[in-house]
Image 1 (cartoon, rainbow, N blue to C red):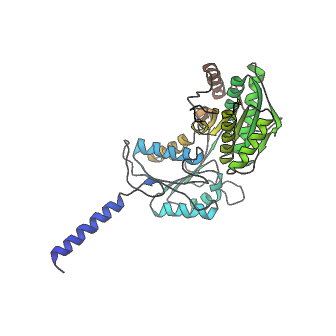
Image 2: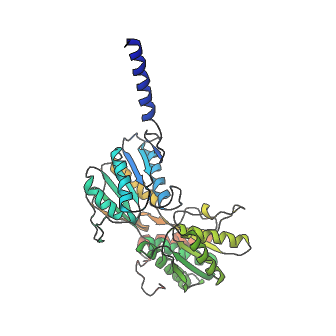
Image 3: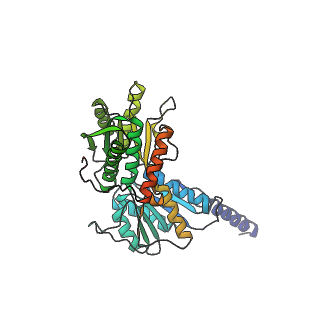
Length: 368
């Protein structure tokens, strides 16, 4: 073969390899660092839970935190969406990330608990961040490996603030709660919300009630139609505002609220996990979302990435993001809350931070 032809082939192959290496993955993210940060070479992967990367909930919140870390530190990022929601489905994508050298892996949600339990011992040179869950082998006995950090949130505190804000804004009326699966994080949102309403009634001259028939756990996080049906029944019973901690079920409830408001009714929704104001927007630009009980999921993800970059990854620990570390709260901007309501809620938030007001993480005497 002539030397000129060999040189041409080598040049073409080199160019092809360069182009492939700088390409963007179809599943999300890129294989080349960018951003204005320090240019960290950390490769951060995420496996999504059920739903999409823009689900206005855990997936989106987690991914937003990763993208913030990309902007701050110049990390490389990628997310993969599994074919299903079984341990095997999650392990497949964790393995795919690991094999592609994404060895800092963030997983959003309790459904990853058994998969992360398996992965933390199988891939000892990787780091895992499990949000809203603890690794276990199906027996619910937590085993947080030295290469894993388990993160929880004080949902009851976020729910409490949302309950206070709701009561202050409505002054009087009926509230309801729609939960997805009846698991601790969802239950704590419910209990906190009820405590917030009760606190406002006792201390802030409001008169908002919540009846047992208007507290419903649908049983899933993805049945949009069921959420719309449950919300419709509550509104028909005279409920003025519904707090939905229910994923896609909550989206259905928000859709029903939009329909009611478009028809002339004055009803509201309280969002969950992230600021759902945009999710509640109608054609006229107004939103049915009164406020949202937020977990700072994005902050948790970004903080763990920063900790790894700084050499301070808290492996083996279980962390709680709460009011004291600004890990929960309401959105910074609440267009549907009056300035008076926002000011009072901010004051109560500071009382929770200081410990002067304590919110119970247990049901106690509240409605189930």
